[in-house]
Length: 560
Image 1 (cartoon, rainbow, N blue to C red):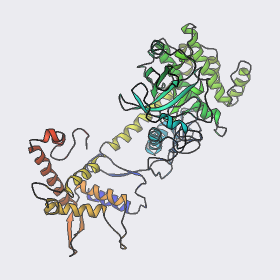
Image 2: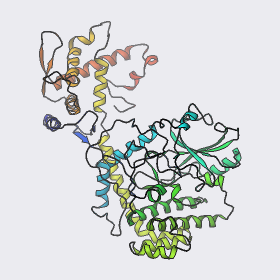
Image 3: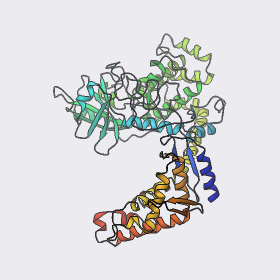
């Protein structure tokens, strides 16, 4: 254990990292190893977009945090501030998200398992999650006149902290939902979750009965390729003339981007690979199969209503809204065939990089163009889909690709499990810091105002100084993550390594102690505090710590 800690200390002593650089993660095991987790510099959706993240996607705007930058940068016209509220510093090159499989079953450079492992463990996943968090907490853009109108507004006594997500430069559009809609980021008072709140602005008869009828089939529908609908309501809280308006609350997908913005809005976006087209087709077929199995229809699979989340995850967005704004009187089989036809046209448009490539006149030529660089299987699938078949008739055409897709998912699950295993015991350092915080500088204990300055507690105070208050030869503070993490790991292990503590008195006294001795002192002192609280008759009313922390300081609720 001592050798491992010494090796970790030597490795960190050579590192020149700032305090805000990477995150330091304690991995599980006894003794725990010290692991440096380096995140990727930025997160880019794998369909070739040039931007970072966005909120739950709006049909008209590229992204809330998009516009060519990484996490924390805002595209033109977006409704949030470009100033990042997360002080992350990323070092090293991160892995690109595995965007799918080619016809050999392998990615161009490595196996699917290796690609997923490189993405999850190499920092790509960390950067992606940071983009999602940044999108959830990003401040509204300064100078946006819409922000002042939303300040303090509560919709339906539930949704507050509203922030606009629409791109002001593009204005309203009715292409996706038949009537203009406006999208907001909001927080639900019911559960504290961030959601994407869509307001229907057009001339739609919004009553409690009509909104409930449109939303009821989708409430509770949970599928990995459909953004869940959580709530629907009618409210006049945001109406100037008092007319009730319909609101639909979907999950907020931070770091997402509409497929339309990724492929057709940005001219610099590269063409999708065949692997990406296969991945998209399989995901949307999966969503259509689940929706059709429940006796519903997707009501059109269009690029403006598809968002890309978690790298290459495609999701249908805004479900339930079209059922209110554009009710379809056609028989259900016709609606379901239209879903598959729209998916086929989408694949053709993406392959040809033109939103009009799948029109009735251009379709034959577009399929010929696809055949020049796509496999015959993909061209055949797109051709069959444009005819509007049933889902059951299409599944045999993709069965071989589904096996590759399953392999990719299992490989990613293995990588996520490995990452979770590394994080399982990362609370050890936090537990030590909490114990030191309870002991150091305590004003009084057991009627002794000098308790924290005498005996074992004084040594713990000097240990705190040695770890956090070190200075160099010129008296400048030494602000070093490697030094702190290495020392706390040695303290947690209780290694037989000695360190020198400098007294605070004028005599300049020096004391040589071992980490093993200091760990014993800390555990014994903390146990005295816990025992004193458990003995107090007011412990249940004053705090829950006596019930939740055992004698060793292990938090039974938090796992610290």
